Amino acid sequence: MIKVQGLTKAYHQSKVVDDVDIEIEKGKITSFIGPNGAGKSTVLAMVSRLIETDEGNIKIDNQDISSMKSNELAKKLSILKQTNHTELKISVRQLVSFGRFPYSKGKLKKEDHIMIDKALEYLGLTNIQNKYLGELSGGQKQRAYIAMTIAQDTDYILLDEPLNNLDMKHSVQIMKILRRLVKEMNKTIVIVIHDINFASCYSDKIIAIKEGKVEIAGLKNEVINEPVLSDIYDLDIKIEEINGQRICVYFDNEYIEADEIKTLAM
Image (cartoon, rainbow, N blue to C red; front, side):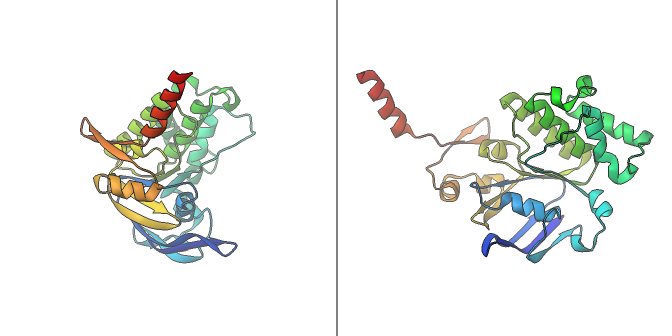
């Protein structure tokens, strides 16, 4: 379990994360949702120790991360940041192999190659593993970075907007892969995600953050309801149930009808 207590971060005397308490259960997918600038990515960055906390403490399996050596933490937790850029001319396989660095220190062994092969297969990248990153589409490149985090073989995988640059087909594939990782390998997945319908359909637990504070945390059906979401996003959100899944509808009927009337009058 990841346990966060009193987590606070401020920039220029403005709190972007304000006294946050959360618990991430093992063997589950937990999604962070909320408006832009709510502090979701900042929480993830502090949990992974990419940025320092101002206040609060973070424990992974009852161990304070501040006392863990970097290599020890890297074997326990992996993170994919929101933006990933590399100017190196490297292949997909070489990128994925970077995930093995905490174990291999750059000298890959048989067990490292086995894990690299597994990650490539999981993400459907085996056939293009020798292509250079510069030859890939945005979606292929994103999948390669996700494969790198999987190759790191950590108990906890943190993904900051992993569906960036992915079309609907590949977004569904990624979310299905994450569910497989939980089911087949007992991984714990934490994702920051903007598409609340993907969060609704594929998460076990959802944590909603607004203006640096946790508004609600619970099972997905506790969070995916009209009053809660309408308050979080300041938007009229309706929910329909389709095949047992709660789907959020948030387009403006009044605007569409007015626009159609205007078109017909022309």
